[in-house]
Length: 377
Ligand SMILES: NC(=O)c1ccc[n+]([C@@H]2O[C@H](COP(=O)([O-])OP(=O)(O)OC[C@H]3O[C@@H](n4cnc5c(N)ncnc54)[C@H](O)[C@@H]3O)[C@@H](O)[C@H]2O)c1
Ligand SMILES: CC(C)[C@H](C(=O)O)[C@@H](O)C(=O)O
Ligand SMILES: [Mg+2]
Image 1 (cartoon, rainbow, N blue to C red):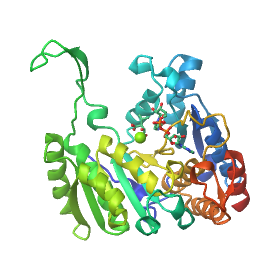
Image 2: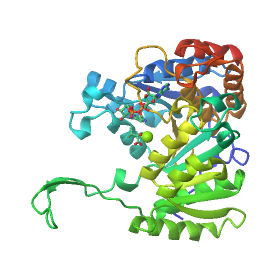
Image 3: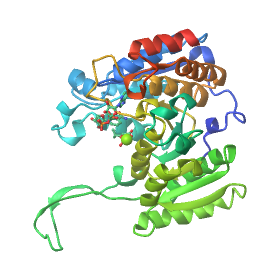
Image 4: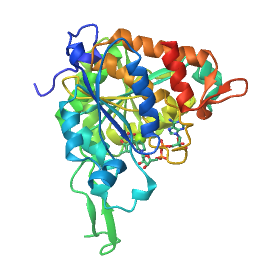
């Protein structure tokens, strides 16, 4: 058997993976709004009854600036030895001209690959209070509760060969060309399929596999394996959707979808689209898990350089990522519930950062939002 199940996707069936008092969290703030929002998540965690050891380290552009590399050795070591990782965001346009291996984004890609975090869970839940903040009509999104299961360590993101060269053949032979390789091995597809089916089994028992099997060989294999694995989950209804149609269905009738399973690149794109259904990408947390329930937790958004340093970023995706960490990797479901209830309460109380602001609500900054969540715990 080349895969194991992620125990924490099934919290009610799992044991106690870690001794609570020994929990060590690697805190990796990164760039832009990363430090601002991670700080709020740390305050929320510190306000719980549990005691966590938190160790902070540079990553991304901050890693490059301080240590000459976006994923400094010490940061990777810390991430490996910690029980869980809470990650802010990386990226800054000032590093866009660096060679690829030194760009901030390599830090998150390197962590995912090094720690074998192949299963990325990106829930898109619409809090009823935010129905008006979505760009879609309230009746299209109200009650939305969608989960995207994105494969995270394969696909065109990591496929070799890749690079720049002189085109070896074709109409543009001799011209400069850039190329990447989309690839998936059967075991990679199988293990993410199991995660998706198990998750769907615990939810609405509907799984939509998104691919581009009408064009791509990789997707054809993906679809074959999804169908094969589905035989082990007769109570989950599997259907297939081409990615272009999935993009359309996400904005046409998102509530018809329950769990989506897809590859790395399609998942990246679709999860940003799904984010907007919830009002703002600032509301979307995520979990990236390995086979043994070790996880990295981060908001689905980036470092938002356009609003960095202004104290206005929405910290809720980061705070909700901390809640996911407690539930999935640290077996502290009750504490996770407390955080999620507190977030609901501050939204019900009408507090909004700029990205989810509507008339009649109270506009607050990052820190005030963090304060309110702490107070509501
Ligand atoms: N996992 C990551 O660390 C990650 C993810 C995505 C993008 N990035 C990087 O982030 C940088 C910026 O990328 P981008 O602009 O395409 O995407 P982005 O997600 O950083 O920002 C997109 C838009 O959403 C807004 N936004 C994002 N998070 C918000 C929040 N919490 N509160 C309020 N508004 C928020 C931003 O202000 C911006 O207008 C790039 O360097 C990119 O590579 C990193
Ligand atoms: C920053 C980038 C490498 C990353 C990705 O493409 O996976 C981001 O967009 C995400 O969604 O986490
Ligand atoms: Mg993305």
